[in-house]
Length: 274
Ligand code: BTN
Image 1 (cartoon, rainbow, N blue to C red):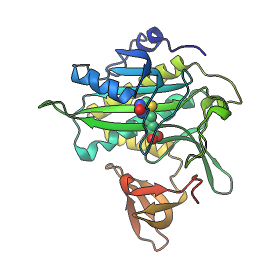
Image 2 (cartoon, rainbow, N blue to C red):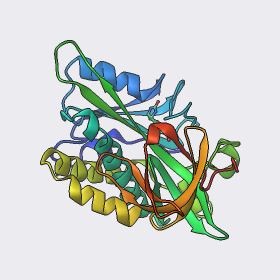
Image 3 (cartoon, rainbow, N blue to C red):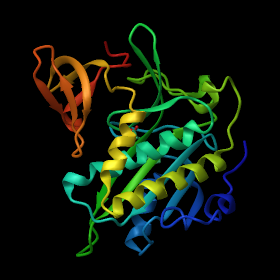
């Protein structure tokens, strides 16, 4: 298992902000915490923390597990001042960048709202396997403007037997999707940082429309009939689109449109919880 190559990852040049500087660590609790500490000590916008292993990796709804040197475990310090309503756009930029970067290696990688990076197949409904995910946390250091930490976890070179089992959405890795062929993780990081740099640049210049348009082409849910649990109730409908503030628009059988907020919704599409 090749180690991550910091020179290849951060030395590629050409980026405006994201991934111009960063570090590769061997073991951390969570790259989110390391990145937060780096931000508190003045790390610049776009500073990247990568780790070969995490002891306490966290996901949006629980923990994040990945054997040493088999995945991408990344956190990025983002100094962009966005309002709470716009914070969602950072998740979106992360998800779009991941999908674009990973598609380069072959699989038809897509985004499952709100933050899952997946491979989706249409066979008796939508069957989804999760390749990775995106997590955004916000920190306030004294009187300074809030800093966001964008966390990204991608399953790259795990064999099927080393993937977490019993997860709500079955897990996969790039290697598993490629019939057992390993992927150069440093090359994956370079592509990912290049795409993040591009989309973060759009956000900084105040152009979220292009990001939303790209999401539409990468979503595995658009036009699909899905079931969702919202505040304990199960609803079914067709996905019509996404609002700039992050809610998924669902057309119910009655013809009424319903807005799904990610904090209150569990999508049952592709889920083993049926
Ligand atoms: C999810 O799908 O729930 C998001 C998973 C995000 C995991 C990454 S791994 C790198 C970074 N450090 C963490 O502790 N979590 C994120």
